Length: 621
Image (tube, rainbow, N blue to C red):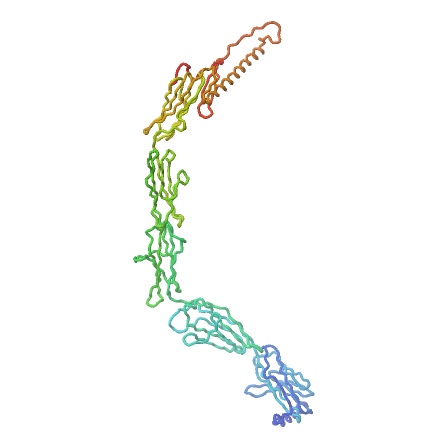
């Protein structure tokens, strides 16, 4: 029964529909568009106002169907609300009504829902009205994926080449792709940039967009980064999504080369290993060849590096490197050159060579020079001690101390490691020279006393030393030590009378003497000479030691007799004391002078002093 009634009302409404606009008795308001994400719910409001109170209000909802025909999906009045059956919205829409308003809700919005929705209001005699709203559906695409050309791109005079592609999938409405070079947008340009875009509508209704960038690359693009950006619509806004950047391998010919010495740093000296590198600016790197100026002989190269082992000054010169530019027009070559200077320091040349003989008092000028490519510095040393700075050595008024080896060190201050040296041995010849300042020495000694006489002489050639002694005849030479240029002699003499002892030293250049004038003093007198040999004190010490030893022996004898009971101590009567014959073993005492290495040996035999040799015989040296 409800259906005929509904049809009757609909017929009545259609009879009056032709004049609803002209009568304008209702004010109906709807939004132009309602935007929603796919899969969400959309609410479409329909607001209306009558100028006169209607007796009945009917609201119907229509959608634009295939072919442009309207399809009703819902109707209602103040007593009922009904969703039409057998439409694509039968299970997805609902209507909320209140006074002067009705809201259509579309659930689980799909792409096919992007269409116009009509709201038609009829108040019969009070007036009619109709409005429409476009429902717009959005689905953001996936982030863009970019791929660069892996094989690289050659710089050439031809047009643009494909260098990268960018793709975004499943978006609605259709997204757009924009290309960027180092964050600067790229737009199509004739002969330079061409962008090819392919739009695919999937069966789902979503769009996939692929864009290929064709670009005329130059050498400057070798470090550039290309990226793409997707822009797409969302409810109430436009959003973007940017891809990662990709660098394109750009191949270009070599236009210049750079040449430098990689090692060693600083100045080069003989013996160094030199590495020279040459590198072109082309990609891929072109083969490099090395040669010396004015020479066509190619030098061995390893990975663009020329290695010169243990260079010498002969390796100095101009070195060239060339790039074999196979990609350039006519295979033209580009090159560079550099100057290599190998510094050197020749062995030192010393004048005079090896050794030189000087006479005492003479002067000598020695030189030490070494040929070098740089400024040198020379220092002379003697026995490790700095003697002179500069290549000239001046020896003035030579003495025996002047003799020795002189070493010169030649260095290059600006290039450590360059160093050479030389030497010269100086010999100084001259007459003998007595070490002591006094050539005549006066001594006093008691008769029977012993004295040490020393004579130290220096000379080149080495002097021959002899002693001449008049007066006392008991003497002998106890020490004679010789070196390359010195003689050291010591004589021991027993004073028996006034004596003159002379040390004679001779060589090819002269004679030098040293005299000792010894005055003898009788044994009972005390010496008063201004000089006394240190041996007199030794004699006194010997006498004291001998006396003590004799007392010790005598005490031992008495103790022995006492133990045998042959002494009358503490006993009655007389006992004979038998004097045993003492041992005639000699007691030897060594007497040494403080300032000599020689000693005088005296034998004490039963308390009597005897000389080292027969007292009545002179010992000749």
